[in-house]
Length: 284
Image (cartoon, rainbow, N blue to C red):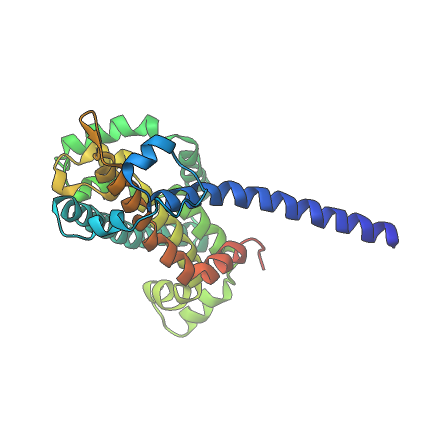
């Protein structure tokens, strides 16, 4: 008993140490960026990123400039609004489309069902960098370049989201479908009035992950958008770095402010995220 107790304590201490190291690696860049957002651009260029608090050089001028209503501030909030609209649209459309696909693959039996599911999973192994040129040519052909639809269309049917929804639904009892049919509900009624409400944890978990992916996405919107007034936040912040001048003040302050929406979403729905991630792990 003593040997088991000591070995379990050693394992607990080792696991704690590993998690502390991982948390430090995650928190350090965030803390360094937060500290840098309160320092002048010249000081930042001279000393670089650091987590050492130098009170003598810290100032709120970066955030005051960001919210002052000048040209840079207006462009920043235009990019911020574009990202908000695109993220909201992509999350809503992706969740609905992927839920319907996963529902069909999970709740119904038909020919080639397993083959179709395999093909969906196989697309997860193809890097987006391989697909972006054919997708770009397709957007040119159907004349969706420089439109929000051109950004959203190739991304709304996400294989990982379909896989997650399907695995979650596999854990739900099939008796619910039979009970709904006995009560006279249509197939659409069963899908949206019975199965969808009990899939809220899965929707919340995938909503957070989809929102994070859309908010941080830069490569595909950069290829599609041509007009500066349609740029998203990552693209707009990247335009602040030019051969003629680097506005690090607005760049870092804007980057830190841009974290807030995703941070708030995570705080509000973290309980559902954990429930959704664990609910489909065990089939019952």
